[in-house]
Image (cartoon, rainbow, N blue to C red; front, side, top):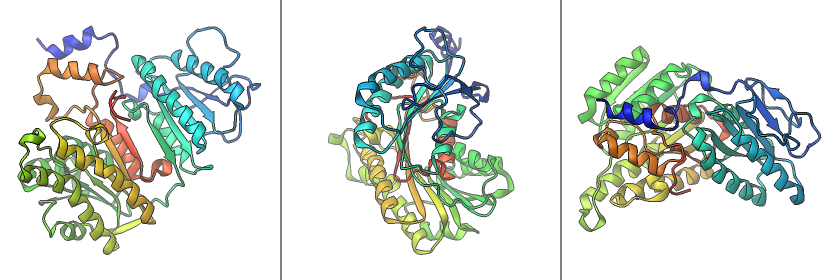
Length: 420
């Protein structure tokens, strides 16, 4: 008997779907600053409207399900505090009436009071909406940012289904290199998540070549990834912590690097009381120090293309900490500050981090099935596990400059109930 199929059958919700068929067929656009506008749905494929109020649900009192399966709540324009409660209440009611697997994007101005208020609204509402596998995310528009339409489009799409309760600031859209004119480099490409990222970047046809690397002990897996990608892929087995690794990686790239994805990482778990220095050091070297060495070399050699993106694979353990993983949590948390610092100091390159949650990989499958299901139900709002494809989709969006994000942390975790 397949115990996981039985458990899925017993679940009150069907398994989380990432199929394009679950993308919103229509989206309600709500602008609280214009409550007199007439409700109407718009196609999710249309460009994000600017300065046009298309719909409001303030006057709708009944609780019938909405015809639209997506919702954009635009709170960028000032709303008097006396009126805000009614608008947020109406929007919250609308979110809870969306069909299953709905997509909700809340837009805010950079104002600290407004964005903080909406953050609490989104964080709490996303946990309730997750029971229906509806995602709710908050995007802060940095004064009419050019990257906003790309970000909204991603969070309304099926590949974003495992992302909810997130707050991200959208900046100016970078000058992204033309397709097939630059290189993408993926470290840790022999692992489950690294392979999915490499496949996603290759599938979109945005890059002239995909350079793949992993530790020599994973050479067979690395070669398997290269074989999946075809002639555009180059495999280079090496120890990322070796002093010669940055130069070797730069030499393997035949064109400027437009996307560098640091997916290489290890765990070396033990309680702090029993943690030897060499185990702590090895984890820090691979998960943190080697990344800085590679980036420094690429900057010194001018190996990055204009508008390049560096994506760092962090973890929810770096966001919230995890007992038995002090070394791992330290390194992965360091990447969050590293992304912010680099993005502030370096022009022309954007650093962002992704913090995956409970993702279905070979490592996770070593946990007994019943325990895995129990963990997922206990710690995620959506009561679902993530897939490597979820991380890959988010990586692809960041790697191509979607949203104009800089120094951000995007959690791909199904609304985990720990950390922020």
